[in-house]
Length: 244
Ligand SMILES: [Zn+2]
Ligand SMILES: [Zn+2]
Image (cartoon, rainbow, N blue to C red):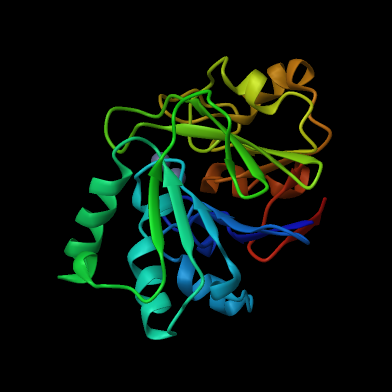
C-alpha cells in the first residue's frame, strides 16, 4: 500500500503547495483523505486515476480540505464514471456538499449521475467499515465554523494511518494516532501557540505518548516552511510517496 501527498498545503497557498489531499492505494483499497479546492488539478498532475478512487474521507468543511469535491464530481460526470463512489465526513456533510456544489456549479447538486454516489455522515469514535477500509473518526478542535472537525484513524491492509487534520492540541490525538504505522500531523507553526492550529513544539512534547512508527508533518505555514532544512522530522511535499 502507498500513500501519496497530492497536496499538503494550507488554505493560504503557503510555499505554492496544493490544498490538502492524500491518495492511498493498495491491492484492495483506493481512497482519498480530504479533497481541498485544488485537488482535481493536483490529482491530474500526478496521474492519479480518479475513476479508481472509491472512497473520499473528509475531515472538515474548510475549502482547503473539502472545496475540491464539486470539481471532482463534475469530472466524474464528464468522464462518464460508472464505479460507485462513497464520500464520508462529519455530520451535516449531505447539506454542506449540496451547498458548495450549488455555489460553484449551479444545479450540479441535482444532476443525475451515471454512478452511484453515497454521501455518508460518520459518528464519533465509532469504527466504520468502507469495504476493507476501517475508519475511526475522533473529534478535534479547530474553531467555530467549518466543523464538526474530525481526525481519522484508518486501518487498511494491515496498516494504520492516522491523520490529525487541522486542530490545536487535543488529547484525542493520542488514541487516534497511538502506535500508527504512519501519523500525518499538522504542524502549522514551529513554536507559536495559536488557537485552532498545532505547533511543532506542542506536538513534539506529546510524541512519546503517541509513539507512532512514522511521523510526517503537513499543512505548514511559511514559518515552518522557512525552517524545513533544520527540522529533525520528515515533512510532506506535494507528490511525495510513502510506502506502507
Ligand atoms: Zn486546512
Ligand atoms: Zn481547517
